[in-house]
Image 1: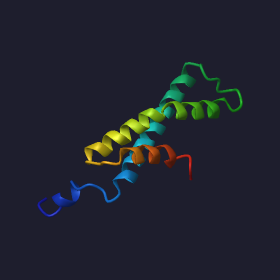
Image 2 (image 1 turned 120 degrees about the vertical axis):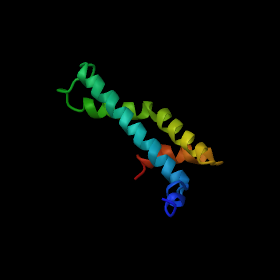
Image 3 (image 1 turned 45 degrees about the horizontal axis):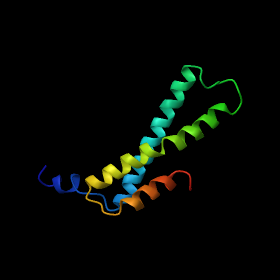
Image 4 (image 1 turned 90 degrees about the vertical axis):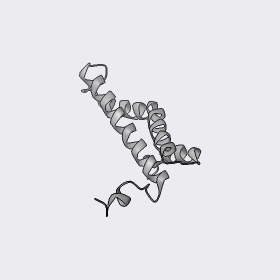
Length: 97
């Protein structure tokens, strides 16, 4: 344990990329669970063509604040200073590629 404790608890080499990835993952998970909940309650019709995809796009846009909050909070815990860059990187990480 004494040999690896320095590697386990150190910050990543690129904290903006790491925090943006975590924030985007949380955003996708929240949007997916909201979509499943709406489909289970029949608020989104699963038989109409394209309604699930349209619902996912709308929910992805609505949950952008959740992903940005999570990534910025994690970035502040890593003593980051450029939080605006982290938010912008989180916003563009999934749809850009």
